[in-house]
Image (spheres, rainbow, N blue to C red):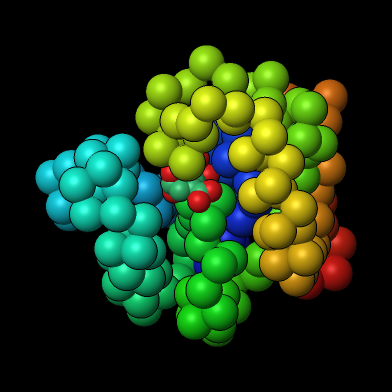
Length: 170
Ligand code: S3P
């Protein structure tokens, strides 16, 4: 079985949905950020502050390289995975890509109190979200399927993904 890959902006619920989905499907759950933290022994925020975003992106690509060698997994990616084409090629190679969507306002409400997202530790996080959101939108839209998460619980989003898979639309 192919991997199920969840992409989408920070705060769209990739990790929570991914965990539920993996249990329902009996697949292994992989959270890319968690693998990065385990293998480096550092928090994502520490990697950003000590080595910068570009080193973080290199590590992220190395992890994608490694995990895409296996299948039958649900993979929750970090919001910036779409920034490198090579990541998406690898993930697409043996996976079906689902994008979880939410509006900028909902995203802001979900992430505004979160301190471990280094890209949002700026004076005006709302502005930052807008800017990143607009820049990345076309990249997220390249997913095989987009799921609107607004008003849905993670459980309901997982069900929607399963429906899509069962419909054989993949
Ligand atoms: C990032 C999103 C984060 C994490 C890192 C960079 C991004 O993951 O990978 O802080 O560039 O959008 P989540 O989407 O799980 O918050």
